[in-house]
Image (cartoon, rainbow, N blue to C red; front, top):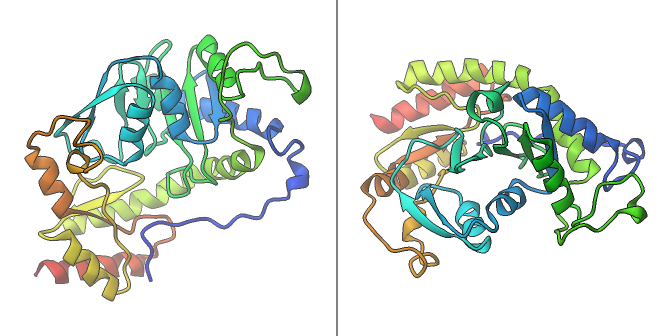
Length: 304
């Protein structure tokens, strides 16, 4: 089976990590990641969704999001005390977008200097280290900013409202917070993949170019390669028979029964069509040239 994503295998010597819960590797990873994306400061946490939750909590506003979205975003918006409204934009997948002024969701993208190209001042940008993401790991998330005050506040919030200290039993409680900090094992896994990211992206550039030229697309993502077919359910079934794993990113959330009582329903023809016709094909650095040719041949066969 040619898998949709590549999930790395890891061998970690935990004795090298020092404090497994919050060792020096966490701060080392924060500094390296901030430098890579062009920001001054970073805070590592247990997930990107935790950081989005903290960023939205207390805004008491309406957040507009595309209906084609992973479930975590609507969940976090509502649980953080905000209202949500869907729009019919279908082009954001695999890219970065502004959830709210100054709050950038970059869970599907990690690129050099992307923070200083998109954000300014005290803006925050949030990244995911879910295993299938560009910098995959054992989950985890990172928030970056050029504001030390902002990042220090996040570091306190994710550490139960205490000021970070090398002595775990001597942390000063300064606010009510959450147990959302990332641990050393998560940091080590993601950090190793950050070191390999440039090489990985170079390989993905070649694979994407082959797909683009053969299938007629202009995909630019380093995370997903999505194509359009008449019936994605039938396509997925046929590809499975050929030993090719495919998936849907994502379902149209405005029709979900859980949100119909929360959000006023309105027609979204682009999102409805997207849900039925778009499909993600295997796209990762472990694909061989034979794999790529085989995938292209089977897509063409389905479309004939």
